[in-house]
Length: 303
Image (cartoon, rainbow, N blue to C red):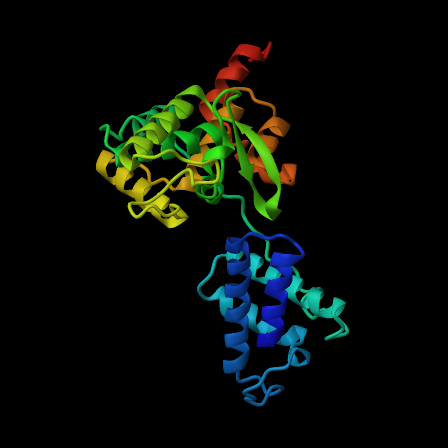
C-alpha cells in the first residue's frame, strides 16, 4: 500500500497539477489510514506487516471512520474519506483493484459554520496596527494590506514574485489551486505598501530586483513561508488585543464578507477568490442580521 500511496501522490502533482500543500494533505490523510490498517486487529488482515491494497474493504474503512469519530469533527472525517475515495479510484484506474471500497460509504453530514472574519472597524485597526518604517515593518504592512485587499490565499501570496505585481494596471497575477492562473485587482493602499517595501528592500540590499525574485522574503533573503506569515499575524493580533483571533485565511473570509456586504455580485466574488464552484463562495453570504434588518425596514412596504 505504501508504494501505491507514493505513486498516487506523484500523479496528483504531475497529472493534476495539485499544489505541494494539497499533496501534503493527501499524503498525511493516507499515511494515517495506512497506520490504522497496520495496527488494526481486524481478523481479515491477521496482523500482517505488509498491507496489500486488495486487503482493504468497506468494512475496514467503516471501522477506520468509527475510530476517527472519537477525536475528529465531521468536516475532518469527510475530508479524509474523500482522500480515500480518490486514492482507491486511482487504484481502480491503474488495475490494482476491481472496485472502489470507499465509493459506497456515505459522507458524514457537515454543518455550515460561519467563516471567522473581522468587522470593518477591527480590520482597519489591524491594518493600521503595524507601525514604523523599518524593512520588517514595511513588509508586514504590505502582507496584511495585500491579503485584505485581494482576498488571495496565504500560499498564493507567499508564492508571488516581484514581477507578478502590475503597479500600472493595479493587478496581481496569482497562481491558484491546480496551477490555475488568474488576475486579481489590488487596491491603491496595498500597492503603495508593496512599493514602499520593495523600494526600501532595494536600498538595503544595494541592488535591484528582477521580476523572478520572491515578492516577500525573510531575514535570510529566502522566500517567506506561509507559516511565517501566520506567525506575524498572530503577533500583531496579540499586540493589538483584538477581541477575536484571526488567521490569514480569516482575512480572506473578511475580504469576501465585506465585498458581499457592500453589494458585490456573488459570481464576481467567486472569480476574485478563485473558487471553481459557486457553492464554495456561498459560504460567505452570511450577511449580518443588523444589515438584513436595515434593508428589510427600508424596502418592505408592509413592515
